[in-house]
View: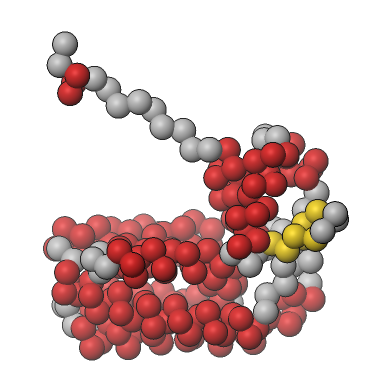
Length: 226
C-alpha cells in the first residue's frame, strides 16, 4: 500500500488552548469585565472542561495581561493600564507599518486577493452590525498582512503582543462613528496594498492604530468603572 495515500490523522487542539481562546473572547468582548472574579467551577461547567485546562488558560491569559493571578485567591480579569496600553500600541503601530511596507514588496497577487476576500467578509459583518464577527475578520486581515511581510520574526513578535491588545482594539469599535471610520481606513489600506504603495500603507497602518488608541483612552475610565 502506498503510504502517501493514507489520510492524515485528525488533529485535536489541547483543551487548554480551546479554553484560552474562549476565555479571551469573553474578556475581549466585555462579557467578562475588568475586575470580575473568574469562578473556576462556573467557568469549567460553561466551557465543558475540567479545572486543570482552565487553570492553564488562566496562566496563558495572565502572560497577555488579560488576567491577574491572585495568590491563594484564584484569578480576576485585569484592569487595562493606560500607560502599558499606550506603550504597547505604539510598538504595534510601528510593527504594523513595517509589515505593510514589506507586504507591498513580498506578498503575491494571490495573497493580496486572499486579504481582499477577508476584507469583503468583514464588510458584510459590519453591514449587519455584528461586531464580534467583524472583529474576527479584522484581526485575520491584520495577521495576514504581517504574515505576508515574509518576516517570521516580525510575525511571531506581532502575534505575541496582539493577544494583549485585542481587548483595546475591540473596545475602540464600540463607538459607531469610530467603527465606521475604521472600515473606511481598511478600504484605504487595501487599496494601498493592492497598488503596492509602500509610503502610503506605512502611514495608513500607523495612523489606523493611533486612532484606535485615542478612542480607547477616551472611553477607558467609564468602561472600567462599568
